[in-house]
View 1 (cartoon, rainbow, N blue to C red):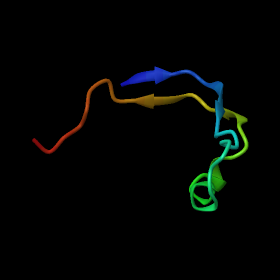
View 2: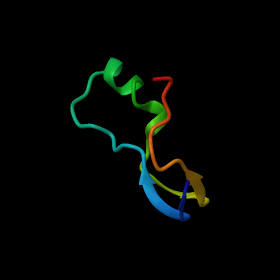
View 3: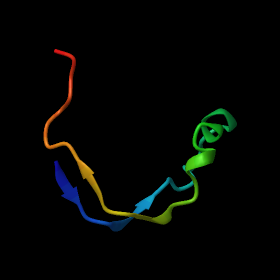
Length: 51
């Protein structure tokens, strides 16, 4: 396992210009763009499969 350090990133989407109401509903939960802090965590170095 490897340590992934904590950090911040921009998450989300901007209001797309000229999109109809149906397309806008698909992105409602991702707007507006906002800063997110993620705590550090461990992750496997390789994929884990059943093969």
